[in-house]
Length: 189
Figure 1 (cartoon, helix red, strand yellow):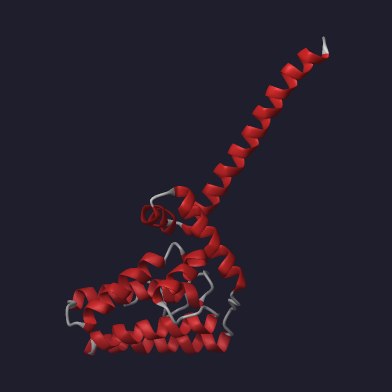
Figure 2 (cartoon, one colour):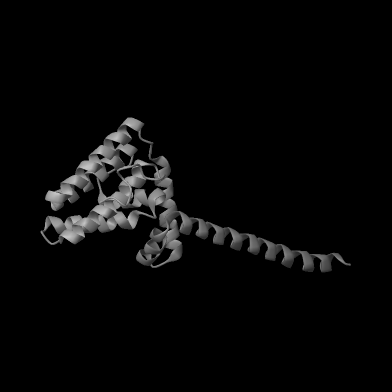
């Protein structure tokens, strides 16, 4: 076989191999982002209008998140938060609007104590999406109901739903993504 024939065979095979590896890398990176961010992945794609733009945004979130000093809570702090949450739930019976507002403040304080910046709601969403993409919609829904409640535009059932939504993120933040403690499980309300 001549050198020209060998080159004519090897070059296309090498190009195909390089293309296959690039395609595999691209697909596996997309799959990782989809699994990590959950529903937030598709939401970001819809908002940006482009998968590439959305994936760039999600990778930027990951990079920012790496700079944060997210830390676990001490057992004593976790117990205190659990007790605080129980009080908020009990408050719901007599003062549901106040309870939802207190739940929002408690979740925000918990985020802060874990190491998340809490000054800006939209940035909180972006920061939380990296590790809590599966429960982020709970936080959005609870926040929307809390905002409506501040305008006296939320029913008691909506307020109860907000508490359930806040509890989902609260339990995940409290336990670092693990199973909820007694007092934070999703069956209580």
